[in-house]
Length: 563
Image 1 (cartoon, rainbow, N blue to C red):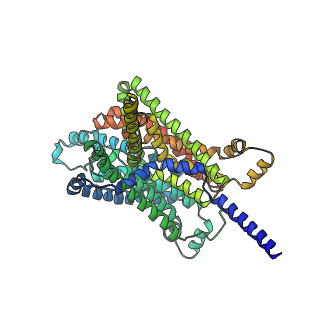
Image 2: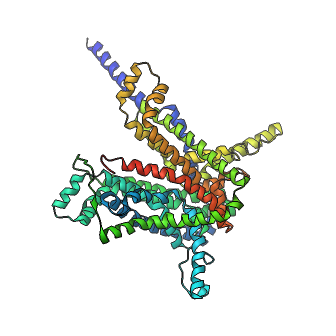
Image 3: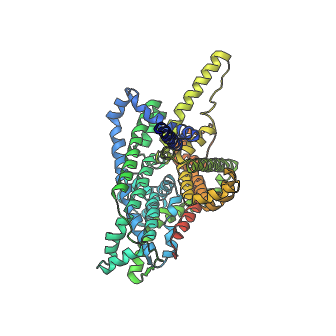
């Protein structure tokens, strides 16, 4: 009897252990996806373990300190001004009514649709020595160029300003969402304890929103490190420009990869600090009452100052540069609107459309694998795949190009040796490698969207559908996707616009004789043909406005009774 009971006990335990192992084992599809999409990051990081050649001696003696210092100054400057332009406006449009506040709450996000390199071109064309602003100053004062002071646009300070004007919406977006979600009871209690409006903001609302603000700030800093178009156009020596110069100027792919790995280490440090800060900031809402926000009406000087404070970032980040772009585009459209522009437009739309659809399909596949076979290992693999958005496009391009170029060369040598035929650039010279780089870079957006949307659907819905004999495919098609349609459309548009704006990865990986709107804008601006560059630049900006408005409206509807 004792032996029989012992055997039964061991059988139950072994069955339980097998069930646990089965649930915790990663699925084959996730392993394949994580391995494939993490190749660029692994390749770049692995370059640090290879020998450092004499090129590094040259870099250390000449420009490496400039790369480090300029990148550091960019981070400090852009981070500070982005916070200044975002947090207070987010609080004002959330808690108060003043002239224009209803429109400013979504309009403040419009600079998010404008790539940093495009705003840099527009401000340079307007405020450079030969631009209309300085020309008007000279005509009105009869002064010569060297006889008056005017801030230099093409400088480190100019780059900080340009990046701040287009990146602050990342912080504004998350800060406003956090302010909307806060409990009215907490704010009311702080007022009864003697806090005025400013004190409630500083001592209650701001600490509660700090985790969201830090997440937004980390995104701003990573985008600053990833920027290439602005710093290159302004002639600033930063890590991204150094990677390009080392790769194409010195023809040294290894050192370029090692520089990319160092830049990647900065990104990982930001990610680590951001995650750690969220763990340390254990601030919680003490009430579950989320009554409609009652906005205080500001009139007179307070209303005017609130309007000015919220309108300023919109003015400098969107209205002024777009005004110049529209003016130049009207004057130059007859020179630009030809068959080449149509081809550029179709190339850009094709790449953005294919990439966004593939990204959404892969995200749905991974989301359902993780939902139906949930485990910590699977969750880790999905998170690992999602790291791509934090990696600069330059780094991803190099990490993609090195292994595929190696494969092409090996295959070509094999075919020449054994069959006396050449395969050429079978992969690295095609659109496949470019689309793959886009997927590595932007797959995070649909993965997070699908995961968040699926978590809102109760598992009981799946169980009820399965009792009717519904397959997983029909369950996804007839129940889940209709429920998630709004979120899926939003992330589809976001990926679409991000691909349209992506510059460094496209510059490195595009096939020969293949251009996009972003690349053509960059080429025309570098040739100082700013009026002609305005047309493709304006097309990119217009395409980016749609998802910005959708995102703003979805945030506004996230709280009951919020207008």
